[in-house]
Image 1 (tube, helix red, strand yellow):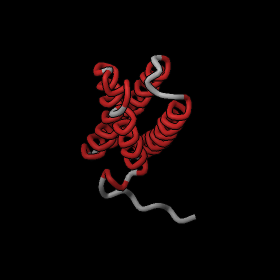
Image 2 (cartoon, rainbow, N blue to C red):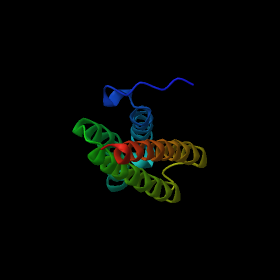
Image 3 (cartoon, rainbow, N blue to C red):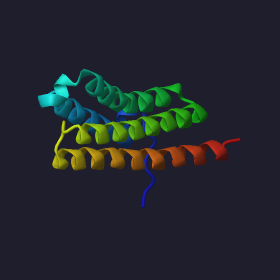
Image 4 (cartoon, rainbow, N blue to C red):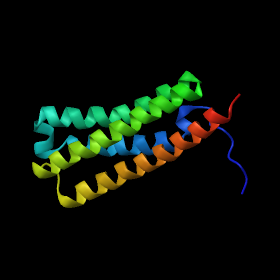
Length: 129
């Protein structure tokens, strides 16, 4: 299997692309019905989702493996925060079971991809002189 060429821009990262898709869906869901009227929860859900994307981008642009690793950890934590908020939204009947399952699945996928990327960055970081 050929080795992938390194990403040149944060937009090239699969983790960022998946986080963007998740954020688009979060904005779509939180902009309708009772969810749109629950300003506090709506804004928390949106902020945690946006934070995932932003931390991936910011860490990548720092151009240091140690800082990228740190920002990926923050992004993964924001993903956990989002998942926790989704439980609140579901329990408050702002989203139905299908929407909850779909968003949770996307968030879990983003977390897995972030975990893999973070591990790869860690390996590169520890193998450098």
